[in-house]
Image (cartoon, rainbow, N blue to C red; front, side, top):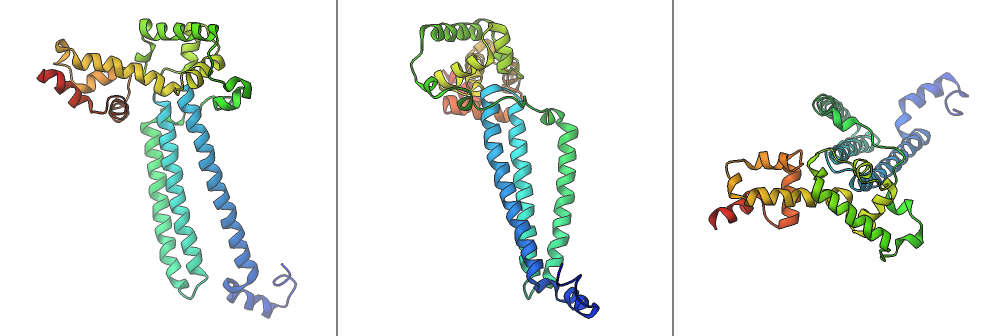
Length: 267
């Protein structure tokens, strides 16, 4: 302001010619990039919290939303890194090269927008918001509630939950949420979440998937089901994608669904 608007025309022209080397302009860029870095760090911290909320309350496609959000933010961070490099070069003796970086940034941005639209059109469920009132379970309970002792009434609720999962098989619903289970067995969501995530030491996502995996294992080892494909079995077990099924199955059994089935075929 003082070195441009309060000076003569000749000084203004000089400023415009030498603006890249002026302290004000450089400081402006530094502040902008500091702000952006803090913004990116804040986003990743929020994503970490969101992941915990997803795992504690959802069991199906909703969890994939986190993966997509992470990919999107990671791509934006990569794009920002290129922009930062461009600005560093801009204020160096190789300033002419920065124009080439600018073209690359616009190209990547165009591809990012196309990818975003492709995701939106083919996966509309990814853009469904989660309940904004949900919090990680550790933020919802008092410190004295963090002990590992299970009172009698909580033990009864755990048995009630396990019997419901065994007898009614709600896990076969690929979009099952903790709210659905709460409505079915009459235990408040918050209390049910504490039982699963703290007392049973499992996220709701892993808790439900353990039942799905056991169900799939029974189908894979059943000789009468040998004509059914692994893809058919994974959908019948409550999974909604081959990748999530294979990951969960290998985590639970240490082997792939195909290898697991072969063990029973050979025997």
